[in-house]
Length: 218
Image 1 (tube, rainbow, N blue to C red):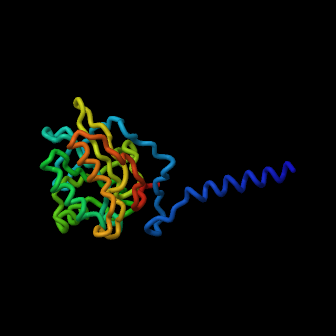
Image 2 (cartoon, one colour):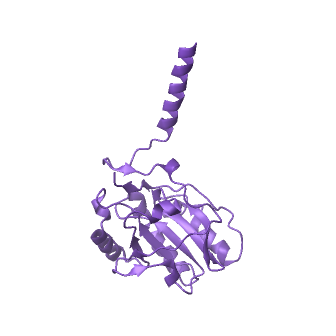
Image 3 (cartoon, rainbow, N blue to C red):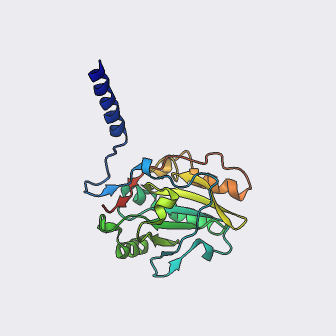
């Protein structure tokens, strides 16, 4: 009976580990982010500022945007099929909400040694091709995405300035259909920003981000 209990315990542990194993978007040998190992921010937390290099070579911080009421921080990248599907929608978000005080700040969290398509020069080229209207920053050293708790590309964090602090108000996906913008029925990020602009509480403050795993050097 004791041996049976040992076998059953091992089986349960094995199944638990299996549930946390996800197929990566590319068959590389990189070490991807384990969702359970990244804590990051929760709704209501203060997001610390950062200073990251933009595609124009300048360093960018949230504090540079003096007139901003908040931010739509999106961890994204070049290579991920999900990120590519959302690029036009990210541009639309920036064009719509920048003038209303909520600019998009895009950050590439991936290690270019693991995924060369996400290198700095490739970021510059991609931004030029798509006509990005927002800063596209590189998380050199991969120090910022773990603070936020980003695990996917894209992964959205809507922040609101309150008493000089950037408070997290929404975390998750941009909307509920990455594949086809015409089939979207829930505009999570947009609804969150609209609520904040109106001074209302964000109804859906957290959703599951759908995308590619962040690429981390072993």
